[in-house]
Amino acid sequence: MNLPSGAKEDPPNPISESVKFGCSQGNELLINSLWPDITHDKWRDWKWQMANTVKSVEPLAVMLNLKPHQIARYKRLIDIYHYSITPYYFSLIDWTDPDDPVRKQCIPDLKELEVQIVGNNDPLDEEKDMPVPGLVHRYPDRVLAVITNMCTMYCRHCTRKRIWGSGEEGPVATNDLAAMVHYIRKSPEVREVVVSGGDPLTVNIDMLDWFLGELSLISHVEVIRIGTRIPVVLPMKITDELVRMLASHRPLWINTQFNHPREITPDAQEACDRILRAGIPVSNQSVLLRGINDSPEIMKNLCHALQRIMVRPYYLFQCDPVRGVEHFRTSIWKGMEIIEKMRGYTGGLCIPTFVVDAPGGGGKIPLQPFYLLSATDRDILLRNYEGMIIKYFNPQETDVPVVKKSSGNGRDEAVLRVLNEQAVPSLPKETSRYRRRMKKNLVPLYKGDV
Image 1 (tube, rainbow, N blue to C red):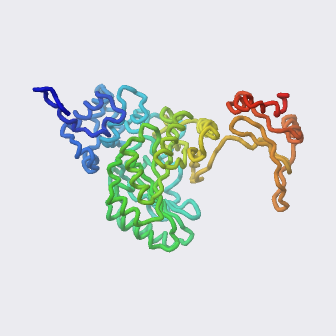
Image 2 (cartoon, one colour):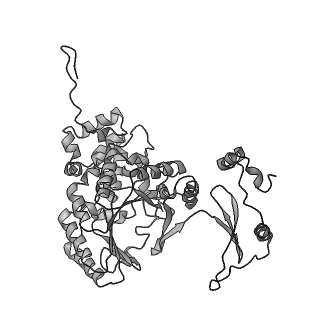
Image 3 (spheres, one colour):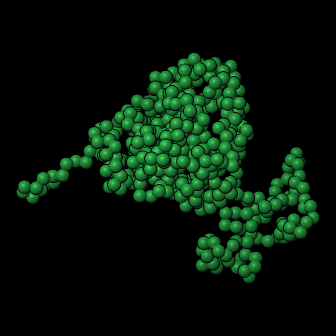
């Protein structure tokens, strides 16, 4: 660039472009005050990121403008549920918005100490289903291995907040990992191992390589799956070295957790792309969180953004009834509303399965809107995403039990009358498809419009 005579070029901003993503100038100043030695190279170094995580009460006092009596309560809170935020994820917070969805996921909230209607340290009874420490065997053909209690960032809605109390001890002992491998080797029904934590990608690469390698040597283990939030909260840790190691243990799948479109930054996209290019599929498991993503519009935007970076929206979890997360939980009906307002209005690949992980170890139970209205032994009454009612002939199979007919009450008799009519489907007039058909003079084909 040619400058006027005597003019000086502005010094380069030492903060990388990733810091500026979604950030105000004030946030950049805050970042510079917390990490005055920041440079581009340091910012891109995952080891620097982990060494400089925000985890003490002093930054909280500054960021939240806490009074002395509030500081004492926050000290108590983080003694019970400690926190850690990577500089990268911290940079995504919009401090001008007290309801910022990134902030809510990572900044401790005194609501975590409030008395709750429900709340259990281990609502899914994982520890009751552990034949050896750290290994959950709940489903017939798969197990879950909790190989560390450490995360680079501790999500405030975490289902395993109970394991935080022991501090950041890192990976479990080698003999415990060996016990998991031994159990799996002696259990021929196990075909899939889900590696979880904590975050398994925080484990030393050599130890993780050894553990995955031991699993890969077991003949009946066909698939390994890793659950991690590293692409979301510390994407620079997805290095070529790490990806090469992971790819050597294929077939391997990665499940991550983006909960809001703001989390899909260029850095996060690059991390996912690096994994995908190594031939490792990436899926997403969001958690439905009050005030963060509990609207059809936000969830649709999130799933569209995931599809653009070739990450498959897999699950939308109802937030578990964990002690300390009641303020994040929504009604079951909110999740079903979100799915109903996505189905048909966007492609199927963009729609996650809404599930409740049932308390007491009941496992994942999928829930969806009601599209099957009624049925007889030969006809089924269906509703589509627009509210269109369709009668569908049900092919008969002699070895399948016949659905009982109406019990005779007024509502059932009305449904039966519709089922018995030879009517074409009725398209609701409020829909855009109705208006498009009206332009083509096709609407009179529908009963009631002639």
